[in-house]
Length: 167
Image 1: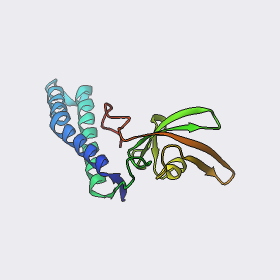
Image 2 (image 1 turned 180 degrees about the vertical axis):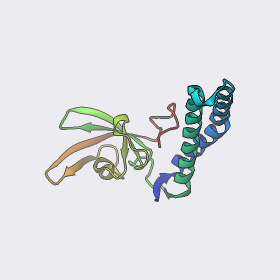
Image 3 (image 1 turned 90 degrees about the vertical axis):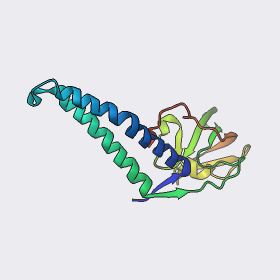
Image 4 (image 1 turned 30 degrees about the vertical axis):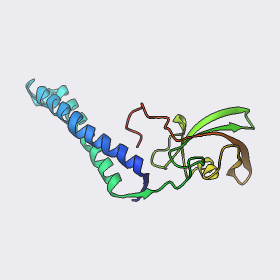
């Protein structure tokens, strides 16, 4: 299992692992201790709920560590004025007469409902390497395609203030 990740993806994952180990883990262990002290474990819902949360956290840590360990690191070699991975782009969709904003990400982070488009999706693949002002054909299938014009390319991220769980 080789996951394509950028260096920033790996840094974000390492931050989440550190947070989960240093902040979340001690809190959850304390919850388990408190629930255990409430008495009979056979009928103690709080104990089972606390254990379940603790196990979910440990599972998430293992998942992220495995992702990092097996990752294939992608280097984004696009220029500052070109569409590339981890760049936010504004495009004008001619067919719908609307402007839309997307961020090109690796397949591991894609979430089209939140504007995160994979570099391997039809749109991501078509836009890679293009510049502001370029009119690009997005081929969805052999029978359907549409055109977009790139209006803006931004190196900042949509989800800077958001949570770390984008993986």
